[in-house]
Amino acid sequence: MTTFAKGLEGIIAAETNMSWIDGTNGVLEYVGINIDELARNSTFEETVYLLWNKKLPTRAQLEEFTKELREHYKVADGIKDRIKSIPSTAEPMHVLRSLISELAFYDDNPNANDVESARHKAINILGQAPGIVAMYDRARRGLDPIEPDTSLTFSENFLYMLNGEKPTETMARAFDICMITHADHGLNNSTFAARVVISTLSDVYSALTAAVGSLRGPLHGGANEGVMKMLNEIPSVDDVEDYVMNKLKNKDRIMGFGHRVYKAKDPRAKDLQKLAKQLATDTGNEALYEKSSKIEEIMEREVGSKGIYPNVDFYSATTYHCIGLKLDLFTPMFAMSRLGGWSGHVIEQLGDNRLFRPKAQFIGEHGVPYVAIDDR
Ligand code: COA
Image (cartoon, rainbow, N blue to C red):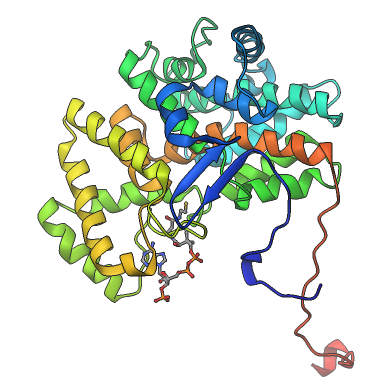
């Protein structure tokens, strides 16, 4: 096959039975279950189990999975020491990427990549990631680390390790819905990066490190921080019209809009919009929500015909802000959730591996003579 597709657009490069997207009608399913149903009824732990095992767990299976995950909440001592030496100016995404890589130092057999070992490594990374983010954020604020509480869910425990107090039920549930809705999304860029790395039979730590690196780009997971910066730049809802129109006139992108796959409103944006609206009211951030919905209204009027609608990042920004998270923690939240999806893809890839090795179309010259350095 010699077809060239820039950005691999439209190319099918892997098989999966984890998530399915209908970009035209704005539908997302995990293992056949609509994302709205999962957002309403599931938990992050159950969703990860579903993605890895391709079926909902029984109560006993969920308990066993949850117990194993909780056993990994505790951050390795070497990583805790390492966090103390990281400059407080470091971006949390760089910290998370680097320390996921360093978790391999504390694994007796980091390169084992049979499917069962990969699953254990994935739990090891998923369990410790919230602690890594929380401990680094506290360290840079000059605060002592908080040890995990294994009686808490993944979401509750993260917010507890970050803030030093247990979250309210509403906040923990809102955060958990964010985790559920960000967990998997077909062969997106970071998932592809994870599958490409593991396809060399490298190791799970390397694959997930690469995925975090990919996610932080502003065209991918980094867009949620871009959305918040934009909302902060707009003084009030009355300024939204001029702001958006100016951006569009200058051919600038409005962060949180558009998607390579969705040409309708991203279903996750719908779930998160409801959450953002409720949390904004509960936390006195109504202005933030009003600015967001005004941006959406103008974008629909101006570029809706091109299929540019809110994506997952648009309302997650307001949601994370209302939960009390700092701007540069938004993308690490995405990463913490997506570790579930990336790991599932790594397990799938290892189960039926073939080395990824596409070709490049050579567009350079041939037969160019070598010129000695003094003659150039
Ligand atoms: N704001 C304004 N216009 C946008 C836009 C946005 N966020 N996203 C796309 N467009 C416009 C482009 O300018 C282009 O217009 P043109 O045909 O008149 O030149 C058209 O829509 C198609 O854009 P294209 O870059 O080909 O789409 P893509 O599939 O490559 O891009 C994204 C997908 C996600 C990279 C793109 O929509 C984007 O940059 N969005 C902002 C970043 C973001 O939110 N990323 C998170 C994704 S989950």
